[in-house]
Amino acid sequence: YDLQPVKDKSVLVTGGTTGIGRAIAYLLAARGARVLVFGRHEQELDEALEDFRRTGAEVYGLTADVSKLDNVRNVFQQADEKLGSLDILVNNAAVEGGKFEGESSENIEYVVRTNVAGYLVCAHEAVTRMKRRGGGHIVNVGSMSANLRESETSTYVATKAAIQGFSESLRKTVNPDGIKV
Image (cartoon, rainbow, N blue to C red; front, side, top):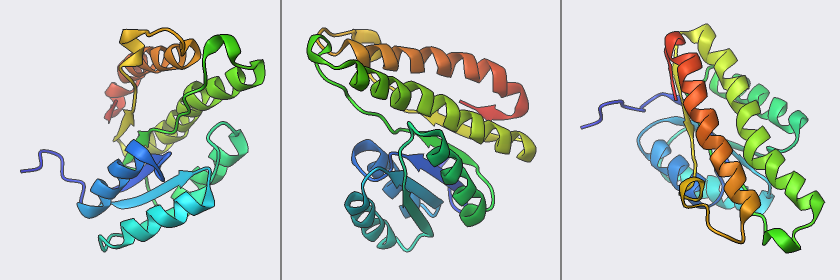
């Protein structure tokens, strides 16, 4: 029994071509959601879409990098065109980074842009659309790293702790508008 059925809901899954995002997108498609996914690599996108289409669901995809604002704007423009509305955002796109001491400053910046700014910008775009509709759902995929705070991957830990705090604050901000986080 589904407490919140997803059949015919419009869903955007960031980082939906691999790993957790791909599994989420597949499950939602299999349950009848209309799904748009994106990831950074064409081959992974093609493989994911082939897999999703076996469910018989309406699925769309494109390549995009969530760390780039113009890419995010294009993704949401495609969501507007393909899905018509947005009921659910699954914010999942993230990168791990490396060992902190050996990590370049450029890579640290990229991890933060992807794992933090990407989530915030996608949520902002989604909230704008969901407010007009009177509600929606935003799922920010986090990590146990936000609480475990293991050594070696300090940049990743910092980004996941930021998402934990952002999610709690965003929930308080948008719940009155019918948006669940």
